[in-house]
Image 1 (tube, rainbow over the protein chains, first blue to last red):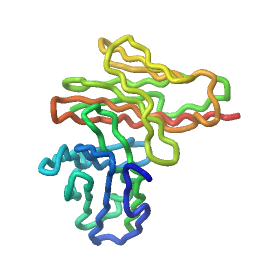
Image 2 (spheres, one colour):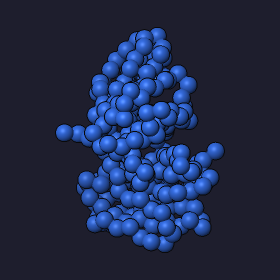
Image 3 (cartoon, chains in turn blue, yellow):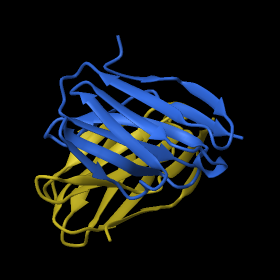
Image 4 (tube, rainbow over the protein chains, first blue to last red):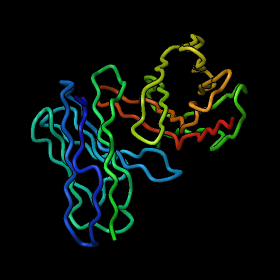
Length: 111
Length: 112
């Protein structure tokens, strides 16, 4: 079984809709992250959480919110999706050793 | 603002060639530098470098960090078509609330 899972894997939605992307991990890590990846732009950090009570904004948090429901679960919401949020979204976890373990990604298309 | 710059952005070589990928950085409170390989899926970890001048090696891949000049290189010798991927460099910076800043990546294409 995969250590970091993301649901859904693909999603097509319309402008203005609320969308939630979910991430679960079985690695027992406290630290979890959400990134988006756009062609030619690398990975950009949206939000990160170092434990259940700790949520931090990344470099591109506008238009997104997160919820850390448990150590193993970290959800990303788009309150009102817009076309420029079309991207590949990755969840990742890490222990204090810095190496990040990535989920398989969610491809989101906003029409 | 922390910055990580990778070069070249893309590279096309033939099988058997040797390639060098570059990553330079400007960050506050450097902790570590990581290299990832990304094929058509999630990034997979290659190396973590914390100390200058110590080469990390895994098969045909090797990497070294220069903390004085603020850069790292990733070398791939005797390239194979399976090495075709995006190679991402990320720098860890900060204190207990550290963060990773990724470069834009280098797209390597190895032709047979």
